[in-house]
Length: 277
Image (cartoon, rainbow, N blue to C red):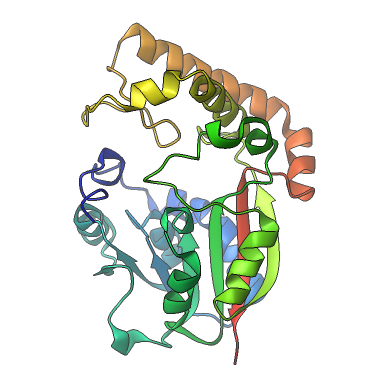
């Protein structure tokens, strides 16, 4: 609780999304829900942070709520989107078996005991409800190349890691029925495979780790690279040039990226499971 309530990435209010941008952002998840639980109406996202995804899913017609341990994020969700976000890892016990869909996106890698966490979270699913878990996967070539120097390996923030097989086994151990695993990679986003590769390379040289040791909560560079960067400095300009160079290259390599996703080698891993009747 102390770590996340003083971490600048989680305690800085982002720009709020327009309904149109939020709807577009939530399109993939709306597709998952329509494919695996077409009758779903009520959604809970655990670790929803600023509730961007929930706001987008509301535009698709769903009744949405969240849960998060960060007070600043809960306040933002209420003020910007009028979304109820419960305090803590889960809602109150009386809400058990109340939700058709449970979303746990970029949360499980932060959890020390993922099986216990998923088992407790699944209590809030109605029978036959589905769970959607997303995390940076280890099947990506970037991890296989850099191992512990992979940008996503950064304790105490990220402490649990999965490939498609072990994420499916984790769902099973939590009493859920795995239905599908897949990977995808962002095309035009800072969190793309080439930029992650560049950051991992810098980490392997010790550069990224040294930058992250600097305690300066007022300067940072995006979600993919939480490092101290003085705005307007030459270093800031260089990092931004690298960022956009990687975006353009990633977009140009679209056919290769889609083949990697289809082969299960994409950057982000998604597992969909179902609560047993």
